[in-house]
Image (cartoon, rainbow, N blue to C red; front, side, top):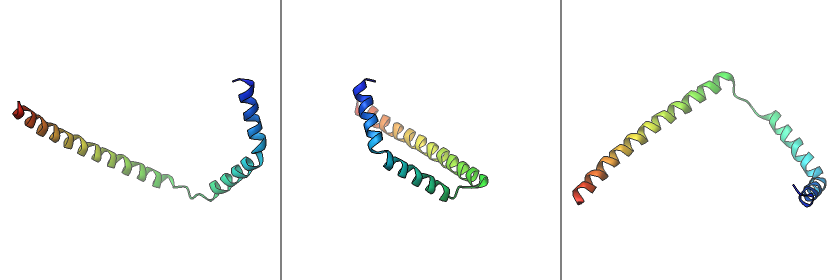
Length: 79
């Protein structure tokens, strides 16, 4: 990086240091208030999301295959 860019970045951080510190303190405060899921809740949610993903993927695949058959049938009759 050239000196001009480094100088600009340095000035930016010096000018905004207090705002950055205030922001980071508020982030730390918010993180303490978060209700984190238990291990069981996390696993249950993960399994549900994965199962839903598999079901939707299978549905989309078969729907796509049906449309391919339909469009191929239409296309072969047009010729």
